[in-house]
Length: 361
Ligand SMILES: Cc1cc2nc3c(=O)[nH]c(=O)nc-3n(C[C@H](O)[C@H](O)[C@H](O)COP(=O)(O)O)c2cc1C
Image (cartoon, rainbow, N blue to C red; front, side, top):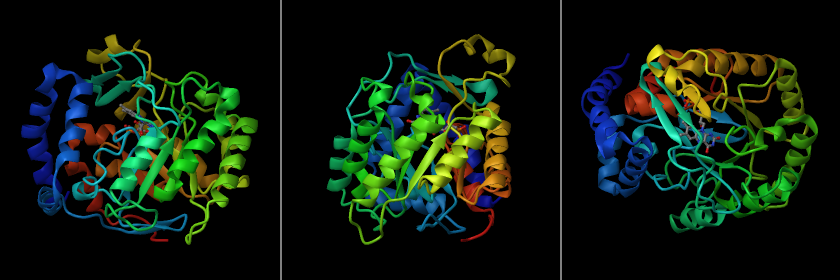
């Protein structure tokens, strides 16, 4: 462990996390909102100070033609509306995946919809793509001067697209295409989220024919948007709950129909690995993330890496630098964190950055 990550770990565990987890009467969603608001409110001087403390990304790598300064990124869902987009590089991240956004603004599911399972180092959420919509994100990124390929915020930005809740699954393609059209000018990559468990029917878009139609339309749309860097690369984010046969089908479709990478995995519907103190929350609807997902996400990444040369972004239960190293060793080119960041702060990011990870191309 590096000295920087050790100091950040102690600081986060003894000062920041207790204060943060107690704020707002312990309501995890309000705490999340104020954390994002706080990060989004930092000015250039505060961000520079934070960058000094956090340390920068290391181990650059080129994936799908995009140069990533570091291997560890912000997973989708942390910054759904790009409110904190200027702060992520100052926390040591090498990239950030914004969203998931939908073509239409929507409130998401009723609250409460976010639960911390502390003894299990886990979270259950059924947020349901609460977001201000693709147009609002495009306006925000435009006003910040963000442009694809220009690293305006210091790091590459992915944008995760989902289906609007009111749009029937049968009309999903034009819904995703509308978002892509609005956001492609700002995204270094686009992530197609077909794996959230919290929008009814969404996961059926992982089925062979539906995924093929969606990906074909999106890659066609991307190729019609003229840009010096060529079409924006499209990654597909998948669930950890696919059978081996379903997973192999997804890998085949993404490989054959213009996908440039696979992000594995989203949250799980399984409830294995919960500590006894958290079992009363097992029946809460939604996706489980964090430590109970570590082994399954690694297994999925291993299977994908063994069967395709497409790059894999490993996400799911990365709670320590060792977990990140195992993901990279299993074949992931990049990793992302959400729950681990909530429990360990930027000490986790610094700890991963301190590792010399994997190939560079
Ligand atoms: C509260 C919450 C909201 C999330 N929202 C999204 C989302 O909007 N889009 C998405 O692709 N994944 C979303 N995720 C899933 C994460 O990006 C990640 O795939 C998953 O949590 C596993 O990683 P982790 O164990 O590091 O949290 C969300 C996760 C959490 C905990």
